[in-house]
Amino acid sequence: MANGIKHNDCRNFAPVDVAKGICRVKNELIFIDGEPCEKFEMLPKCKNCSNFINVDKDDIGTCKGFKDDYWSFGENIAVTCEAYQIKCQN
Image (tube, rainbow, N blue to C red; front, side, top):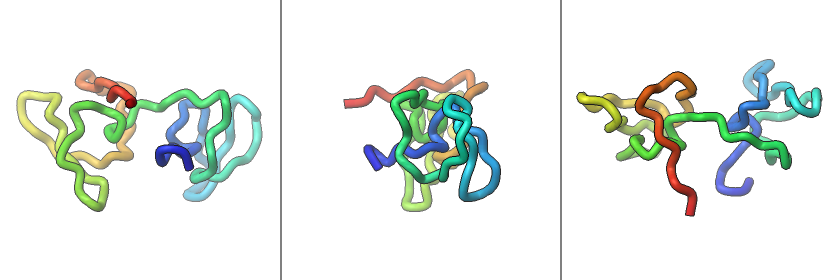
C-alpha cells in the first residue's frame, strides 16, 4: 500500500463489516485494506492531522489542537473536529 493509505481512508468508502465495504463511486464490494483507486478522496482522520502528535506503537497519540491535550486514536474520524488541520504531505 502506498504510504499506508487504504480504502477505509477514503470518503467514498462505506463500511459493511470489519473486512469489507462498498465503494460509493464504483458501487463495488471492496476490502478495507486494499489499494485505493484514482477517485480517492482523503477522509479526515486524527492520523492525518497536524495536531496529532506523540503517536505510539498502538496508533494512540495526543491532540494538541485544543486548550487541553487529549489522547486519541489515529483512526478516529475527524470530519466534524474544529481543530482538524490536514498534515502537509512531503
